[in-house]
Image (cartoon, rainbow, N blue to C red; front, side, top):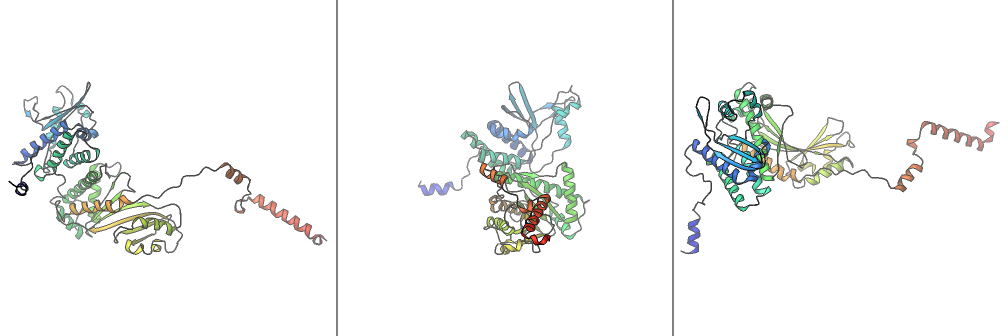
Length: 448
């Protein structure tokens, strides 16, 4: 068999996988396979396991994982959680039960309560349950942790790196049921059109459902950027607000303004990235605020920003906010790049800029789901490109540290006479009297 024939035959072959998705027939089998794959890799790749559990207070130590545990309650009723993780270090032990759901299946509260009962001996009073905590970890977060660990932090053992790569391929396959955020939900099209027509009300259950999906979508965007950058990108949420309160606020804004808005923070970026989805205008706007330099003339400070935007798209909008006034200036980059004076305050050219806001608006994706042309896919692309093409290249203004005067400079500054503008009223009066006396001496006839 010649090499050409061999290569042509091999093109249609399917590579053998440690964690195959072939043959999954139903959701029950999907969940069992996902549980076994995840827990086995957590045991085999300790760095991945520790990273995934770090926010839950888990120890760093020997890891053991189990699937399909069997417990009987006081009434001899059998309960079978999907799995468990046990971490031991010396005499200390940390453990958790794991329940797996795929394809967006809901986890019932009654099921969680039953597993909490199994987590403590029957003789312990229910008030002791406050020592237990329930965590929800999305599949997209699991995938993000695996990608960041594999691509950026690195796995020293080549076999462990290969095993983690197999988990990434498995979770990224749609057949696994664990491929992440699926879309804005079945109510998306109706809510979008109602918001556009002004008929949406905050009391509509569909509006609240879409507001909750928006919160999840922004978290999905953060995890996507984390995968691309290898850093922890965070959703900036209002302080002191519970998830229910945040959804209620988003629902009211959706009904009144037909829009959503959120901010995400990339570590060491010039500022948070703002994301606004205007359902009435069918536009998604991404923006970032940049502090203006504190030195130089207003036009010099504006040119400082425009030099950083020389490769940015022409339809980028540049807003300028000034000190001590509400008035602002706003121009498209295609106009102000040639005429920076357009961004100077018209009736007060010496007014100093305080901050610049750089924004880019694009048509909103209309379809549901995550495929090309969907709201999720187009917004994700816009946020990623806005960061890549604009934000990551921006630098904040440099600040000048205060200088310590040299000894000679300090001596001169103390012996030199004060400028006229700094003279006291007493000094001015004495100088005036001295000048009058000298004038009298020069003009003796004035006293006769």
